[in-house]
Length: 628
Image 1 (cartoon, rainbow, N blue to C red):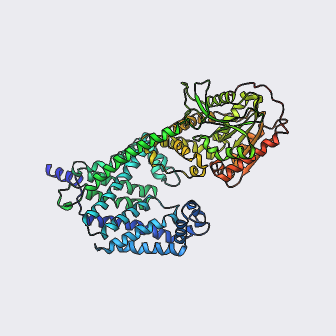
Image 2 (cartoon, rainbow, N blue to C red; image 1 turned 45 degrees about the vertical axis):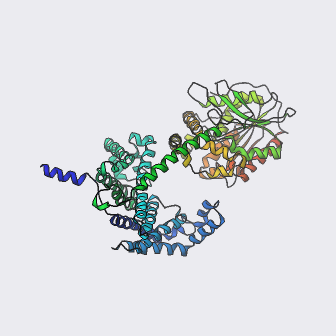
Image 3 (cartoon, rainbow, N blue to C red; image 1 turned 90 degrees about the vertical axis):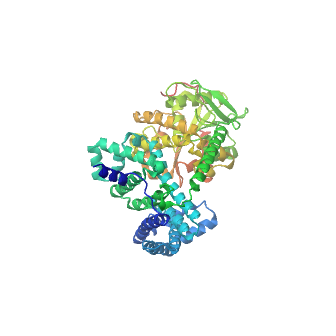
């Protein structure tokens, strides 16, 4: 009995020593099968790349409009149907050749061609290309160069590179999953299995019938991914069970989620993991060069230091008060920093800008430039409590009423007495402006709603209702990622470079700082509670109104246009000018951030104010309070 247990233990526990050549051979064959399958699928479904298809280049090339002109010309050439077909056909031939036996250097050329070809085809198949294609491109390129090299040290460095990438693919995936509540509670499997894209009805029924088993599977996957590198401990003692579990995980995904290529793609890295995790004294790996991991450790330490310094620099820039002109301490103890352009001799309306969720005053850059240049208007911008240099001192649970009160206090203290106020809000900022109207009373000249939120949107809009939960998760995940120092890895979003040049770096500093996302998450929790309790009615607002909608917003969700019109109807009182307009071609974000749209918005506001000058009624003293 003991010898049997000993043999079973040896079979299940311990390293998986494979030679350098065998590791490369197994890896390139499995990745070749992945790429061959992908290219064969693309050749069989060529209609996806033709006009009107999912990957119509006339549409997809817009995603690369910001690239260098030479890069765009190269991509256009690669997107030619004849070139695309030739590359796929070549990958099929090269992949079939790599499945044959042999270990000559020609295999390196074939693998490198497949890797470079996969990278060249990626923009052409922007939709439908997934992680399996990226992994196969990585393995083919690295192993291809290793095959072409005559130096074993170079080969080992490249194999270690693939092994590190394999570990990171599991490690990062696992720890990122931990940021999601559904993964921590074990509900994720049931949720995935009920989706249309990756779901499987039979598996979903099993998860509902056996929730404890489903939770155990989810927690097992988390443990596997988060602890994958343990196979390098104690001479690779856990290599067999860890690699076997990972392979089983990918096979299960192929069956349940339809991710067939994932199995061969990610498993293609396992032979290299086995090679690098075996004890260096084992005959199969004798002479292996292990300097690469030490280099990686030094690079990681340096990167961690860089991330810390970058985060500190961004925090200092995000909270700097140099660009502001003053502060207001509100009734809730919040300190709001603001920037004001006010002239004593003026009696015209002062525009006060109210940003949206996880947004800053910099988003209004093009609008404010136009109002100053074309309309010579006075204006005030500010940061809500918790954003940028503004701080939250309230010690009570946050509600939207707090932000409304802060806005009213800001207006009362900053805008000179006797001057009317025009509130300009974007998204959630528009709703805060609407709620502040009763407290401002006769001082309120009008409200400009820029692609506004509506308090009934979570009930009436299926899109908004279903995405609310996802937004809450995304805000938490983003915040936690920044907290662990991943802000330096953020890709600079396109909208930042769309803003006026003077505010771009400040906008990026705030975007990459935890304060903005922490405040945004706090606000969104309050929005969900408030909007889900809304009874569907809007109180009349005795002020002028300009309601501007982004065309892509209302095209994607026509209910939004109906709700925007309802906001306008609440202003239709005697002597009040009300306009509802749709700005073509823009979306919720580009309405402000792109120059042509932001300038257009500013000009419409200027024209609107000019027209209200003939319909404005005498001011009345402020009465009432903002709704609770």
